Figure 1 (cartoon, helix red, strand yellow):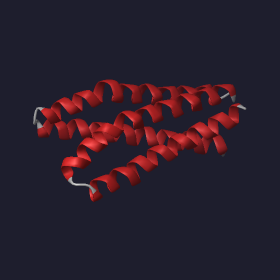
Figure 2: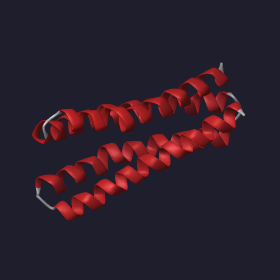
Figure 3: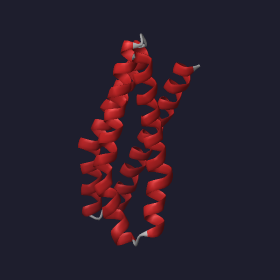
Length: 132
């Protein structure tokens, strides 16, 4: 049961992150006017972060049951980092945008992109290590 939960949690995590970054965001910004696309994506971010956190927690339980405590720790760290991005960093980024501080917003946004990219790479490593 642990192996199933681990693989399904990691696969859901990887697929959700890939879909949001490679399909949804570019689609929204290419098909909607900027004054609609920005607020739409900002409204979607809490749901994205909830999804990532939930999938990472499910994966961590499965990994722990499956006897992979270090992998489970990595998945919990992903969940924790995602919670921080969601509850602390996202409001900070929104404050910078609303204040019109574009250079600071750009730096903060870049950090969130790098953090999501790092999480994505860790998920790939966990999944390939688990099924290899």
